[in-house]
Image 1 (tube, one colour):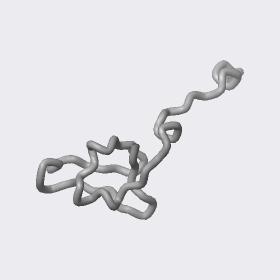
Image 2: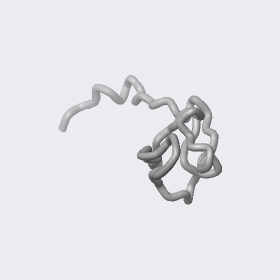
Image 3: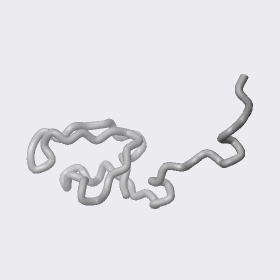
Image 4: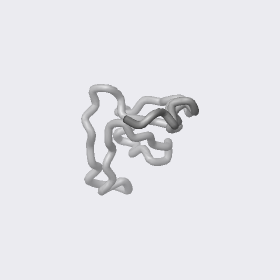
Length: 65
C-alpha cells in the first residue's frame, strides 16, 4: 500500500493511461494504481496503517450530555 509522501502536493494526472485520476493526501493506493512517472511521490506504508481503525469497545457507548 502507498500514500503521498509528506511535502508532496496533491495532483491530477493529465495524460497517459492514468489521465483524469487524482491523487490526494491521506488516501491509500495499491501499487497498480500508481502512475509510473509519478511513483517517486509515494511512500510505502504497512497494511496496519492502511486499515481503518475502530474505537475501543468501552468508548463506543459513553454517556450522552
